[in-house]
Length: 138
Image (tube, rainbow, N blue to C red; front, side, top):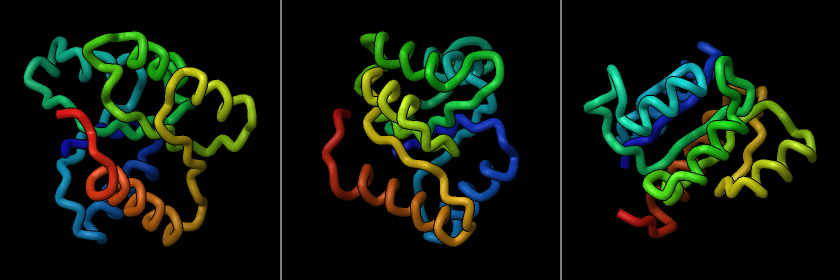
């Protein structure tokens, strides 16, 4: 399953990539750094014309150009994209963000741990759940 990481913080991108490598996760990982780029990737426009369709999206909320809340709403409003599971992976633990994400049909909401080891474990658990535990549409 191809994973799309939508994250603008280079440190969090690096930690996610390291978590994939450390835990031997074989899923290909693509990274985009803003919300508008995420939509271009998902709709296979411009330089993303040949982009693979992700089986899972890890989405930060605080993004430039188009924030993650808007990206999530656009994904879930699009008949072609709405079946892709979206895990909101963000620093925010605000009740308002959690509620809004679920109301916009996020599949899960995870607050990023600040501890590197815990962050790596959370990424592994997300991957394990969506790759090994649940059945997703093809």
